[in-house]
Amino acid sequence: MNRLWLFLPLVLAITLGGVLYFGLGQDPSKLDSALVGESVPQFQLSLLQAPEQKVGPEVFSGRVQLLNIWGTWCPACRVEHAQLNKLAKQGVPIVGLNYKDERPAALEWLEQRGNPYLTVIYDPEGSLGFDLGVYGAPETYLIDAEGIVRHRHVGIVDQEVWESDFKPLYEEYRNDS
Amino acid sequence: MTPERRRLLILLVVLITALPLNGQAREERMDDPELQQRFSDLADELRCPKCQNETIAESGAPISSDMRIRVRQLLREGHTDEEILDAMVARFGDFVRYRPEFEPRTWVLWLGPFVAIAVGIGVVVMITLRTRRRPTDESPVLSDEERQRAEHWLRDD
Image (cartoon, rainbow over all chains, first blue to last red; front, side, top):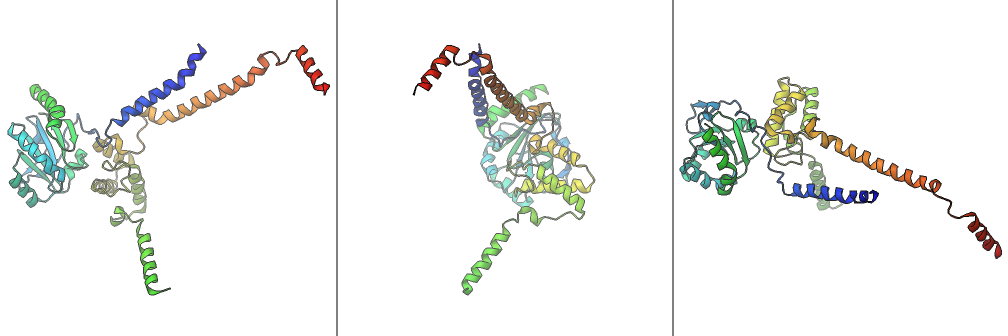
């Protein structure tokens, strides 16, 4: 019986190895949003195409939508844009948050590359971005019809990410409402 | 020293003294020294979400600059340190604090090393006690008869 104790270090080493091996597979740059399950924070910002018109969190009520954070200074957003156009064509409603950008450059971008957004919120100071916990662009959120954040993705949304992470949730919350 | 050498030396000194300057140095300091102290303590405790192994005090990432600006603003508005940390955690998650809150979810993190040390000490104590006890427990190494024979041989030469 006492002999079995000799195997204790081996068992501990294997357990530790397992935990560390699992840790290797995790991407530490992907942080869970602290906002998942919470409402979109309060804000009052103008629209990109209509500077005189202010909007708030009511933009996010009434239907399940994506919120995409982008800027013309962000090279990865360029890569992502085609996928957003494709989703928009399929009828997925996307709200854009133009983050720390300049209005003329952003307008030109949409003209050249197409506009997948129903609404584009203009956030030159990054204040709504900050309240959302945005620390880089692009980021994409799934927001349900009550304006509650359901999922967050940091980085490019491509077809694979859309199908594995977003689509199931998107359909689930759409059926709920 | 030739003029070229002197110039080189001056250049070197200037470059070396420039090293410690980082992104933050260009930002404003807070007028109130007490607030400035609290600011630098907070900036040393908050982790940059983008660069991950730097505090927002060290980091040159734009998000860190935004966070420093927000921390200063909250300090000026009279918020407590705890409120400011909570505000940052609410946005960026627990990850943003270098010293996370002591709560059931982080017990392993905080207490794990002490438990490991305690187990280690326990094992060492057990092993020493056991080895020390052994000679008294067991019979003497040599029986009386064997001892006599040994002494006999030793005396022989």
